[in-house]
Image (cartoon, rainbow over all chains, first blue to last red; front, side):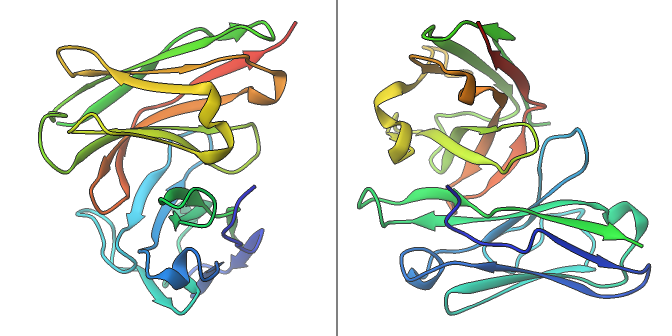
Length: 114
Length: 119
């Protein structure tokens, strides 16, 4: 049901850089809608990590950064830490089905710190 | 301090109607640019947006569930209620409410409430 595609998993050693892609289409990311990213630790509610494609809420470390180009977006985590092990979701809007914009989420990516 | 808390039944029978309440504090739904949304997450699966209501009482629903969902606020506008009709076991999930900003992102979330649909 998700219209935004993410890799199921990525992994890296502590201190490394990992990136998570979020691939959409011309009716969502490619239409110019912003992309937002959430981190979900096991058993907890999602937490806003990046909004408006590249902005960080107060309190989010600058190790996390977002970018968007064309029909895709990416989340980068530099200096990977054990506490970063979580599920990550991208979110945008899509105007394909209803004519107005539905909120849509990505398929989710599990980040494992080796 | 912004907080949101979901409440509702933990167990429903198939075909019953689910009513969930989101009680929030620390912000006002009368403020332009403020919205409250309901989302869900089946066990082990991805997040799914369900519905949103804004400061002007405008409602939007996910297209696939539009006929089954109703979102509303109470008169004091510090609670947002979601009803979902004709519940099915596939609707078993953790249901979250969240504050949404006009940029379309959820910046505060409730802890979620697990709803199981089973006969």
